Image (cartoon, rainbow, N blue to C red):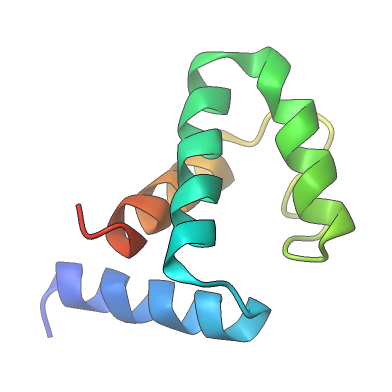
Length: 82
C-alpha cells in the first residue's frame, strides 16, 4: 500500500468513525484550507467541529493548530477525489 492509498484509507476510516459523507468531508477540508490562509476563520471552524464532536479541544486548541488543519484539508481533498 503506497502513501496515497494509506491516506485514502485513513480518510475513509475517519469519515466512518464520525458518520461523515464525502461531501461533508470535502466541505470540512475546504474550510480548513481557508482557515490556513485566514486565521480569523479558525475559531468558526473550531467551534463547528467541537460542537459536532468531530474533534476534541486537545486536537483543536484555541491557538491555531496548522497540523490538524493541514490533515483536514488533505482528507477533504481525498474525499473529494482530488
